[in-house]
Amino acid sequence: MDFDPLLPDSSLVQEDVPIQLVELAEAAEPAAMLTADRLLQDRAKLKEIPEGGLRPLIFKASLGRVNLGDSKKVQARKALDARIAASLTGSTKFVPILTRKGGVGKTTITALLGMALSEIREDRVLAIDANPDRGTLSERVARTTEKTVRDVVNKASSITGFQVFSQYVSRDQTRLDVLASDTDPMISEAFNEGDYNVVADVASRYYSICLTDCGTGIVHSVMRAILQRADGLVVVSGGSIDEAKLASETLTWLESNGYSDLVAESVVAVNTGTYGTDLIKIDEIVSHFSSRVRAVVTVPYDKQLASGGVIDYSKLHPETRHAARELAALVMEGLVNER
Image: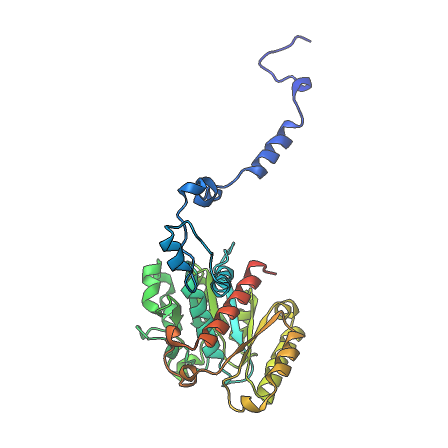
């Protein structure tokens, strides 16, 4: 048979070429890898001024020739910042904050977690008040709108961009956005599974992280929708015997209803600002929950939080802010290594 130069000769086709192309494609670096830190010569990089004690003064006095580096305290702070600012991939991450007991500070923990995330992260964080019995999350920030989750449900089709959606939320000084629950108890009872899904679908267009402040009715229909979307979980316990028991029973209920994996990766926040905490061995409560969940954070008493009003994150006691930041870092670790 004559050889036709216009037709491929099967004997000349190298079967390993496609494999080489696949390997090349897999090895290709994205443009994001071309960072200034990687490409700039050391002499061209801006020298970061060290922090802590006399370190910045020594650095400046020596014209940058003597750099003692950051103090250990500053290093720890920056390491915590890095954990909170960890990059996320994929779609919006949903994190419910719940417990079966009212009055343990669930709404306060939601606000603290959201503020700690928003202060450090560059993306958007939203806290949704999904309490069907009229929640108070919006009272923890300076409210700038009277709109609620009900308005989002009713106007969902007309929300065509973030600027429009931002009219439905109140923004805290840390950049946390808060979507209030219905203020009329008679109307709020109607906030159900379908309504939450509408709100969540709209929010997922504009936010990387959505925190959900849940009501105490764990068997309410809205809870099913909340848990089905959950990528992480924070369970709140007070510092009393009955509060700790109910928080533990919350974990048991979740395990018994198909959420064992979620429980195993969850974080428990023990709020020690509740009544009678000074009479309880908090370390025993922490030990109990440590045997059931991934991590436990203790949130100390803070006068500002105890007042029940608007939270000024910058004026919280340093220990309270540190607890909120540690909670944020632990939540982020769970989202980065999602189930």
